[in-house]
Image (cartoon, rainbow, N blue to C red):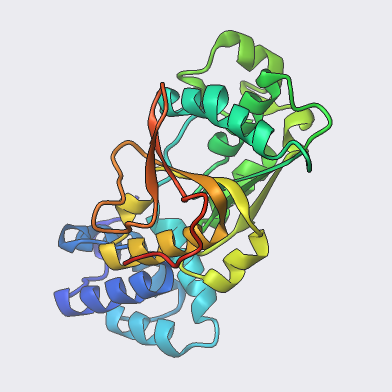
Length: 289
């Protein structure tokens, strides 16, 4: 907690400069109501660098040779990552009962499936996908790659450890919890049998060059991530994801999100359990803005 005298005043003009710097770096957008939040959370960073004002801090982020390292640090401070296992169950049911069947048929010759959880936070989503595939029971002998990425290094450390508190299990069946987790000092550690199919990495969704290293994906989950971007950044992110999907691949957004006014390149696929976006099967055109 901060005492009032520890908080450095953040003027409106400098707030807008810092806000734009963060947006240009990673796409995250903080509206005018976020000025006090940034003032309160970043005052310690200003003092840690022995600076007196946020204007000095802004110049530091612009010109210091460690500016990217500093931007990474403040993203860790400013982003809130609240998630849990088996979130948005209707969509997950469409994935496990319908999309997986399509992928099995589509990829039966090469027996490989690649799935990307973008903005994976502490890892509950990619591990949920791994559990759903295990529970299907008909992918033995397949090469299953599940990749989780986030721009927050702190949450990625938690994801790699795979140790979770009770709050992460609010919608999980007791059977699944017992099958895939071991109790450990009041928390729960995920089995290594699931971790072997899941990898994690730091990734800025606005960086198309680094995204290319992921290769092409059959499914991309980008759920409850776009809500933190402005529309310009959303278009860039979705364009990058379009390029990473195979023809006919699926993009799963959060239920509060849509591609309206973002992209017309995807079809809306109606499944029995939910609706998701699909890259057209015979369409290699660029994303329409």
